[in-house]
Image (cartoon, rainbow, N blue to C red; front, side):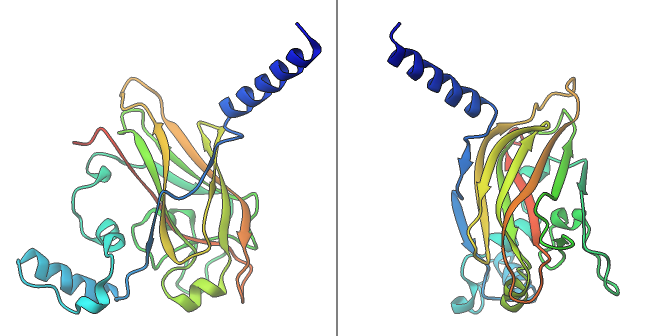
Length: 231
């Protein structure tokens, strides 16, 4: 084998190894949905009228309500069969008066409560644990930043890049846009859907952030999932 072919073979081996370890898998959002231009109360009124087969209200304000449908409607989704066993954070901002910023807030289906790191949070992470029998995951959904209001979103730092670990091994890097939106990432098929298998984990580590105008603390409002094996 020539020296040139030897070098090419070695380089290909490095690329294949890096890809297998997840180091080269960089994912962009496959869909991005802006926050609806309505309050939760307005959406609940709209949703009730839809359920009664009445025309929706304030058509000009509704926009895409898929975020509220995910978080508040109770309609069938991956969570009809899927369940997260636990959510833990490596770090969080201490409570302020009656508000807390624990990791579990990123998976409580309430976009007004948040996980916030103490400081910029680079290197801090959220870990999600699932039972082996849990339906498999194909999509990660992220409300990035303090999305409750435009003012709060701009004031606090947001995530720019997350490193995703599957069962403790680097799997992908998620590149998030700096926008007050729901960003969805197709991540392949993860998990077992097999009661004979052990618990498994997904961990999301902050690599880079978009700085806030007022606070260093980095915020994720919601990080949740969609997948298969439910219907």
